[in-house]
Length: 311
Image 1 (cartoon, rainbow, N blue to C red):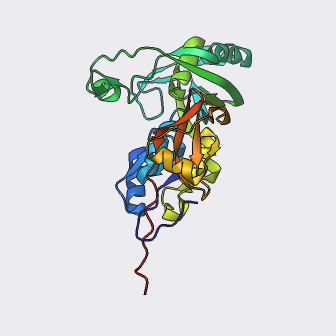
Image 2: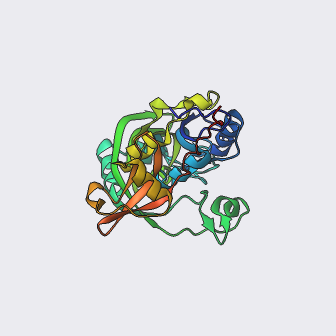
């Protein structure tokens, strides 16, 4: 957990399990109240219908969210084939219902054949009712205002698209699926495109985000259980996400002063790493520059120690 700092708001990373029916910004507002600070940010939102893992940052730890937002995601979802909605999920208005005979004719092999082209590196057009900005306005605002929204396709990677259960009842076909994908992938769009490929339409009826990179929703707190004690130590989080790069007190001081560390670039395994001082404090995120190491993002240095006058 994050260190307790007397009289100060403790910086840290917070894992929250968002419930259904509230927005991610509602969770941020709850965190601000519970932690006593306005400085709370997030590493990617979930739709109100969706549940699961949100990663928040408090105080200067919000700077780490830049390195978390692009991590791969894992979702558990239910796709309903046979019904199309204007939002590609259950919060939208039904726009088409497939003929019962056409739906009944779809077998498991056809479902698997439809999933195959939606797996791997794909070009995906996001859902119209999304937060993507078009001309400075959110796509969902334009759509709800009755304006035509044309979103450009984007490249994403779906590393795994697995069907765990198939249920047929009441004129619909429900698929429980697990999707592992890169950041920016719309699971609603996968439901829409699978339904379109099968000729019966489809939309998402449930969505739960279970993982963001190394972070697991099983380790998250509820939206009503946020406390300062739930904050994770920024140094621990940065080391998990970026890899650890140990520095001496002198090297930490140099990094905080904007200087480079000479001759240690080979000690960084990836492109960047988390510089940690001997006291376990996060100094910042560093990168290679030739044979040297330089700061890419620094965090505030510890406050200087104050001592009373000698008696």
